[in-house]
Image 1 (cartoon, rainbow, N blue to C red):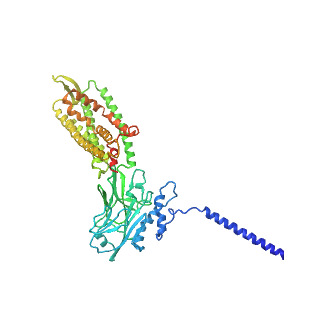
Image 2 (cartoon, rainbow, N blue to C red):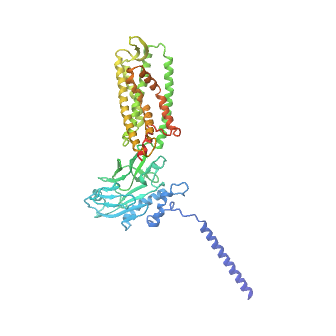
Image 3 (cartoon, rainbow, N blue to C red):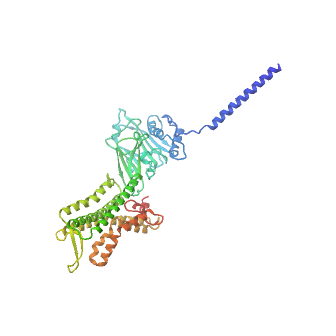
Length: 523
């Protein structure tokens, strides 16, 4: 009997060892199991308890980090878009108060006789504002006509007003904010309005959302947008059906539908446009330099005795390029006006194409008109004793002098006066802002002086010395010297822009970067 009992004990021992090995293996598998990635999981519509909401909210920060795991951005966006419908249709609570989301859920009569106003104060649950209270800076106004226009015959409408903090990640950013050019959602806050899964569009009277913010720098533009889930694979921001009314202390958005809304802040020139304009400028300047060299060569080759027709052609060419200089000085001043003075609502379709047509086309029309009147030919400059001191191909003596006064003198004084007024306004704005920030940043006055000097060369302020030439020979020399060196001044200004380390006190150009000298007071 001892042998069977020993064999049974041995089998029992082997069975225990096998169970121990299985337990160790299962424990090792659990130990090597990958951590849960809620940002990649499928989000079910009924998983809106506090724990799941907190887990999904962490993705607002995690998604977009290079060291973070993969994220299903489209799925997460749908999760939060459906959250408002869940609040309206399935949630029994009237408020939601979490660090990342604040919401008010209330029932309202469909036949309400007054517009509804809600406060959206930061870090507070949205609340209804009575008619006796002052309008809060951040608010939502829903017109009474909205509730009567809803489908169905119900006497009560359940409404959810939500403020969602989307954080710094790439959720609810979309392709329009994917480039690293300074574009962003104001305060990373979305305002959601929902009556459930019932779509509300094409309202007869638009709803109104007011976003408060500090005065923006001149190179930033604001746009009222809503999240359009039908755009692209994961959705994108759209401004269809919304209007934007910017102000000094905030922006008012008016839209004809209900969804998630936000205020986009974007630079006037995005990265792609700025890069394209840079290449166009390089190509255009290169072509201009080549043709200027040809012009100089032709002038030298034809400076001897020429026929009347050749002299007229040379006069027309000289007249054309002189008018181009005056025209582009005026256009530079116009661009400065849009960039620094007007700032808002300055969008023009095909803007640079239109500038080019005016800058190169208008002088051509004037030259064609003057040429058709046979205005070009030999022009003699005489001294006080009426002796010829110099002859050049320009406007003919005699009746053509009237064309000279109109198309050169009159044209110059018109563009110069406009440029001078714009330059004075820009200088006033720069020095006004510099005095306002004198205690915050040192060297503002010097920056302002350098900025105005640089802009003066761009708008051709030195041509104003033409008015002083009758005073004596010294003003004639000054006029000739300074205007012949205008290209040198522009080059120095260009070098100052692109070597900020060597000229740290210099400001930036009027066309692209004049805001650097004054943006500190707008922040």
